[in-house]
Image (cartoon, rainbow over all chains, first blue to last red; front, side, top):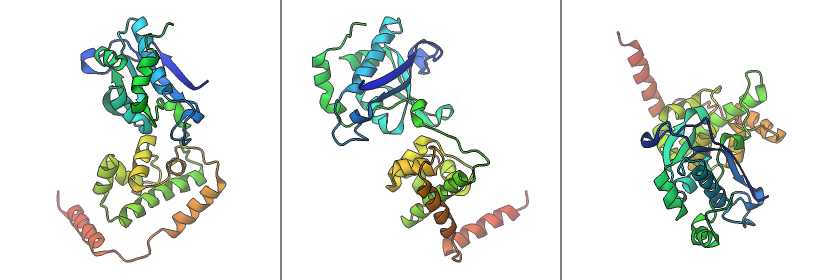
Length: 115
Length: 157
């Protein structure tokens, strides 16, 4: 196993204004295995684990009829990945989730991410 | 599930994703809030606030400078330095560690966000908290700030 992801397909409605209240895939937890984490080892054994997992969440969202909408609370060290590399919208700190920043992906952002 | 992405797509993004962390979800925080009766952890939190205070002053930063550099709220920076019962969130600790060049994992432990497995750290935190209490007279700036605040408090409403 090179990474792990836990998702919910209910109970986490979207927050971005244009899709507020709509259903999405919410990522409760995602992480690479320690030996693939650039924060823990100098040379990760496998790269792209995060991209594969996020793409899988987007695909699940499409299959569920959520049009690629996903949401998650990023740990501080991963904010760049979600904002820049995944193109998700940063909705700021969420005080109900230990101050982690909440990110959400719209259908248009999902399409761009998969290109 | 048949994947809609392929090897080419992954190769296209390989360079951009290099060396980026992906962790998300509060389950990954290994978090433990500090309980009222846990004296050693409370001392660690006190030492955390004192450490932030000294590191900030060493750089000649105001609390506003610190909050701006770490991208946290000024009110939170004040609480961190002056409220020993306040446990800042992991994001805040991460931002402060980065801004001040301090080790993140140790800072998460000190701040009460992670269980302190390291007994040595607890002992050092107590020693630091005890030694770092200032015995010097107020500086000119501290004196002026104190005077102004006391004057404001004494103004009739």
